[in-house]
Length: 248
Image (cartoon, rainbow, N blue to C red; front, top):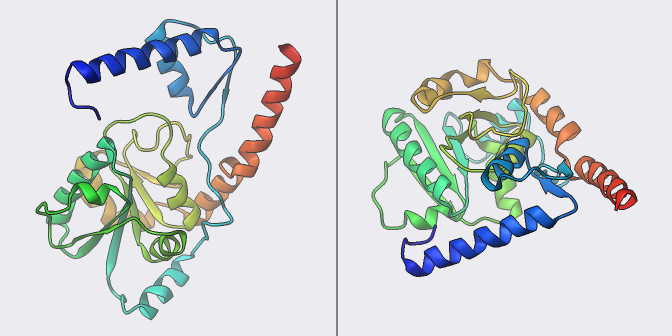
């Protein structure tokens, strides 16, 4: 995210050395995904002594499930009956900016759909040209986010690069929105087949039209509840800490 110059190169070099030293000297390491653990091991050529996977989670007390029937009722109440809404949530971050540019391409082909971009990533596009069927909300509060998640027909994650796991994926699934993602966007989550639609970027437009018949939103919510609620992750992490203390 830095501009390339001598000062940024100095900062990045210092950051690299600090990360390498911390990774080398730590008693144990915690990663969001196995891919991240392997990437760190390969980057620094150091095998971690002990590591634990603590993925990003979701607060199920603030992300509410909306069934397909309830979703249509909410849209009707808001005067959006018959509207087809595709959602993307993201912060002002290079991979998210790239994803929005991909959504622009989709929007030009799917003129019958409305594409809603939520989050600070929208600030990057202020004043820039965009397709008429693409809208930006900017930052929203939890109540507004919950409302948006309850009326979207499909949620998109056309990520091309990045690390860790995507929080937006868990929000989408927990809320009952049908999800289309690249493999990169779903990395590290081990989502069973049939819960979301995995597609290459050139397949997204077709997937948007067919995802309803190919995904099970109820099983997707159940999967998140069993594997990615903060309560479940916290219990596992507490066990890891207990074992680490015994071995220290």
